[in-house]
Length: 432
Image (cartoon, rainbow, N blue to C red; front, side):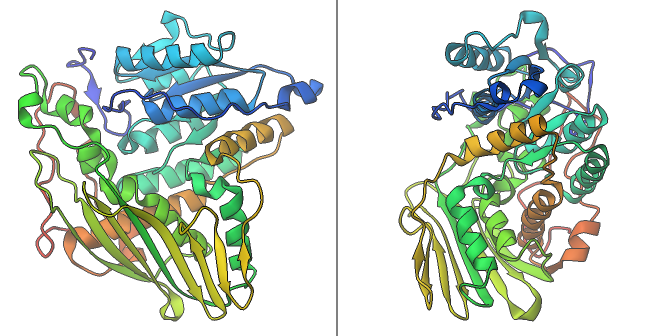
């Protein structure tokens, strides 16, 4: 880790890195013909990676797979080892298209800026607490963007990111979201049928995201004496709400996004929620389970249950019931409709992570624009809203959520600072 004690750590500008050990993601190589097929648009696209953990490195692999005439040009992280691992994995797969010499491996608090200023397409994959400023910087520089989910961790970040989205639209920049299910062919067809009325009027959506712990908080004995509070928290970013947004916002957000998709990305009226920490941990301030009930117009209720506890039943499922039947996702390998008009997806379900990048680079080459900004932030805010309701024990309206003054960490932290984040929230006592 770099010695950054003299640098200001604005939490929306610091480049976080995944604290998990690097794992090379083995997605299938998809042969793209984009550059070869269009000789009129043959400029080599320079890709910049911000955040070299597993998900960021996977996104870089998919970006390179999406367009033959692209190169990985620069990377940014706070961990030299993480960056080196990522570059090695990508070089092994794309030997001639990874051009990242030492002087384009950027470390430190301003690393994201150095990547953005010299690349055509940027992949934003640092911890989400820093996403709003990275989005804004990429838009300011006129770059095309792939942004991992979620795009903010609190209402202040949501508003900042929404302003970046507005400016991206004005500049006609491509902005593709890492809400991968929206790029799954089977889910796209399923939701099209839902929106075409094949299950009738939606009455309820019940979603589950039950899994094991993503990155358990290590015991305090693992902390080296020279690590400041801020460094320790960033090394374990998933376990702190100011960095991850909590488990609901960071990972169960995929199920939140499917609820939003069902509701055609309309805002709910309000939500009420429960949650807590069942398995004690030394440090960290995130819940390991949630249940959120989102209320929409006409008394339509969408329920989400999430849990990250080892040894429990795992399940990731959506049951969407309407007046003519039900759309079921996750019970079996393919979405299906039961009811008046029975259906099951029978087509080719391509790798959704790859489709995201195929469509991003196809749009860049064609001179067209994909901007996922508004719906991706709607889904992000739904997660934040649900967390707010669980933390406080209060019913939270959509208007209250987006206007909230919630800001989970000060903006003037330094790498070597002492910092005590909010404690484990106590419903009925925690402030909104």
